[in-house]
Image 1: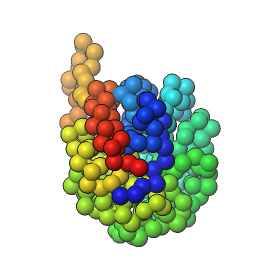
Image 2 (image 1 turned 180 degrees about the vertical axis):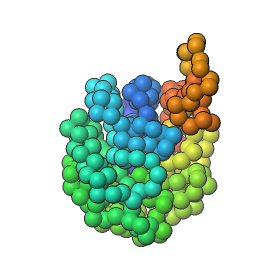
Image 3 (image 1 turned 90 degrees about the vertical axis):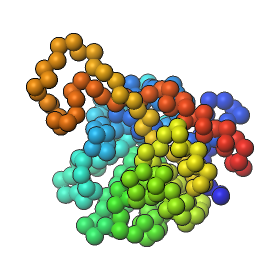
Length: 270
């Protein structure tokens, strides 16, 4: 299958333009550095991954930019939940995007829908105009559209650079048939990047059966808090989530995915 994937900066010269790009979704500067150490080509910087990712703080963006040599994309999402935003929420998105741009992001990640499940073309176009010359990714709001064929054409017309999708299923592996269809529909007009439940065990299958040239995953593992005193009676967040465990980017899992990806595409990509 043909693709429009641009050359990416990889770890050795022999890898250039031959391996699939690995994007790691992270919610901290430490996570971003782990992704870089593991060989990823790009990070998507977020906050609140438990809600699917929201806009990170200016401090997080600034420090990540100082520390990273790989690509830095920043999600612009003012809250969790649906992707139908009020006028004030959209104004916040505009300001957040401009801050991310000023702080040195390489790209932004957005997603806005109308109440009928179509892409909000007017607001998406406005954010794209603000973002340029940065690259623009439309995130998994795409998976909540009523018609992915029509939605993809809308994004292409708007000039979006890539779309992140699980194929409208809970995981990219389950949505693989639709992802493959989207890759065929996209041709050389937009990058289709699968995301959702991708790991070192299934990434090879997803790439081989869809023909994608970029993948998106979190590559996280659970870590225990270093706190010795613990008040188990109080929950600062959801009561079913421990205050003393959290998921962090696992450099070894990133490495495992990169190792699975590069050899296959050094053989098969033109």
